[in-house]
Length: 158
Picture 1 (tube, rainbow, N blue to C red):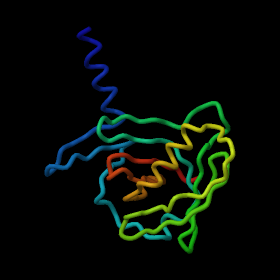
Picture 2: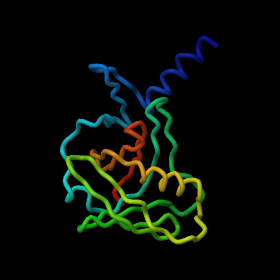
Picture 3: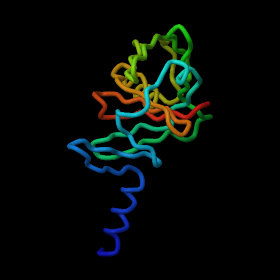
C-alpha cells in the first residue's frame, strides 16, 4: 500500500497540476498553463477549424477525453470572419461569437433535432458553449474556459 500511494500521487500530477501563486491557482494541461492572463488573442488567431479533444475540470484536475469508437473528431467547430461559427457534432450547427481581449462569448448554437452519434459528448459541448468566458491558443491548441473559468474545453487545430 505504501508503494501505491506515491505512484497514484505522481500519476495525478502528470495530467493536471496546480501551483498557488498570489492566491490564484495555476493549472497545467500537457505543459500548458491554464490561466487567464495569457497573450491577447485576436480574431485572426482563432479563425480556423478546431476539433474538441478534452474537457478539464479545474477544481479536481479531472480530464475527460473524446470518446472512442466513432470516427473522430466527434465535435468540430470553425470560427469564421464576421463573427460566425459553424461546425458539427454529427449534426451541423451554426451560431455567432464575439471576441474581445481573450473574452469569448458564443451565442446559443442552432442545431437540428437529429440524433447525435455521441449525445453525451455533444451535450457537454453545447452546454459549455453557453457559458464561455475566456480563450487562448498555445502549442496549436485552443483553450476555451467556461462556467466562470472553472472548466476548460481543449481543441486541436483540425
